[in-house]
Image 1 (cartoon, helix red, strand yellow):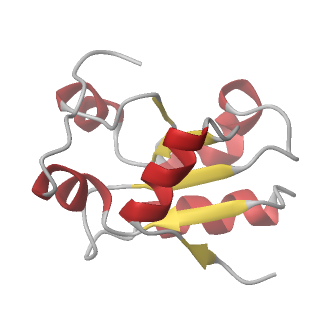
Image 2 (cartoon, one colour; image 1 turned 60 degrees about the vertical axis):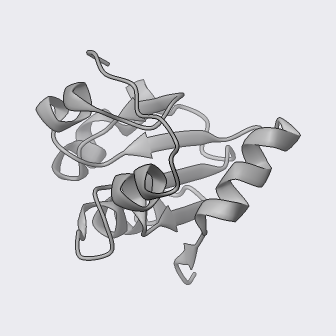
Length: 112
């Protein structure tokens, strides 16, 4: 199975359409607290294997990972780990927080 990517526009379309998916911030928990995309859950890339069931549960659910920007590899690592664990509908939003905020879209602060 090949990793698929999603753009900001495609993500916004999913949100506007009310599509069912889980948005995963693959950065460290302290980075998540400083600012994350609305409705996202914290699941740091290095903790995917031990925390995926608690955070995500259903492996048939669509999962979209993201991190800080195109140079960050945490979202790709998390997405690949989820695919290895049996999640079938996984996307990587490579633009991440930088792309999101550059479009004037808000971040949310606070603990997961």
